[in-house]
Length: 388
Image (tube, rainbow, N blue to C red; front, side, top):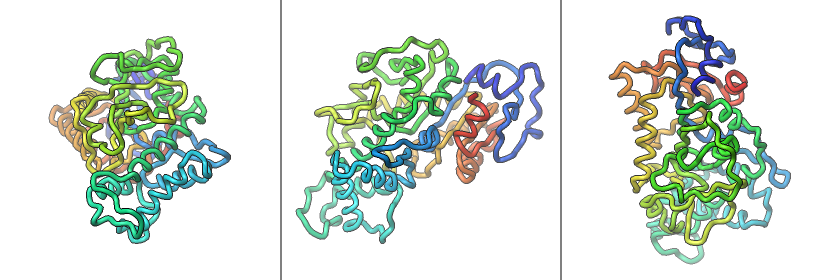
């Protein structure tokens, strides 16, 4: 956040106290909680699903409250979304097919709802074994695909698109964007484009900002281009699990092939696209244990993210639960921390925004690699303290 972080988190001309005297309280909402002296700080943000969940309270779809889904409550959100649509849009039919699979084929022992990642992983690994995962009645499918995978993903896309088309533009992402400075980097695991839209509305340039390899001709604008912002120059948004507005040639029947290519079409629109393009599929890393990335465009994104973690002075984590099964993320973070420790280059400041258990997990990971820390239990409280 550069100068904004220096202004909001510090007082120019004051001496920074030793780390022994820094507050270890679980939550701090005072603007001067940490005192810095010196030049603007290069800031890297790490955003997970909890950031989008915390950026707004809810939207209403046909009178029903819909929140941004998390891994743990994904199917609860799906059920609310399906009830909101009734028989329209085909969402009820898709959900019933998915629900039937979990009732009849999988050893979930009556547990419902189950986490999003567990649900999709079961669907995905079962596609090649129709002899083992057998429905109680009906036609047996062929190995290699199952339509419930497409149902699951289209439900996900429908929910996220419905949210963005209704959410207030003055959400907490917009406030975060207003405090960014040139050179800041946002690493996100989220598919939704709520943050992308906040950046675009403020004059961010996606041609370079997404950090994708290849020419800018893959960016397709269907909205007016805003006036470029100097404060957002060189601000990167690295979407490590892909994005709802990235498209690649392929189909839902062969998702592995989707990751052997780079995005061929990126749509920059006023409102999120609901329908799919013929012969194209959105390029996201599905919520599966052990995600797969087969094209160098993904390696470039992750290498760039790793490099920013090595050189950042401030590290802000919002709503990222650090799931153990996200092996690429765990590996990248662990290697960055190990390297910084070996080079005696701790973060000047770490800010962790999440519930207590998750904050503790992050602070254990970053132990010995930070001079100061600040904690908040919610995005809203963090914004109240530092995004005024």
